[in-house]
Length: 146
Image (tube, rainbow, N blue to C red; front, side):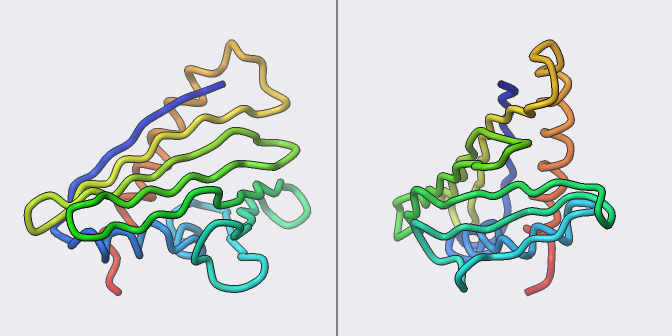
């Protein structure tokens, strides 16, 4: 499995940072050729399932994810979210932590990915590409206007 970690600091308060990084549909605007749909309504907690669809037309794949931990930040306590990837093409998990830092906050994401069709020898490359793509997505989510 490819494992990677990304992190950013922001002047946004932890509550606003949390809202932005857990706005699953907003992730689609940050990742090329991707759309995100939430099954069953608003993504507000454990049991929420959403699907990231990557591709052009019929050529692509779905990346379904389920929220299995949902703890928004509160006061000095950090927020934590854990997603489990339940797809045929991609499996693994992702964790997001949003921690208050002074007037702003810090966000850290850790992800473990396994692509069904790729040999493990490519895990380092997958991790490197993941850091770039998801690092840019995180930066875009934090920079966007509400």
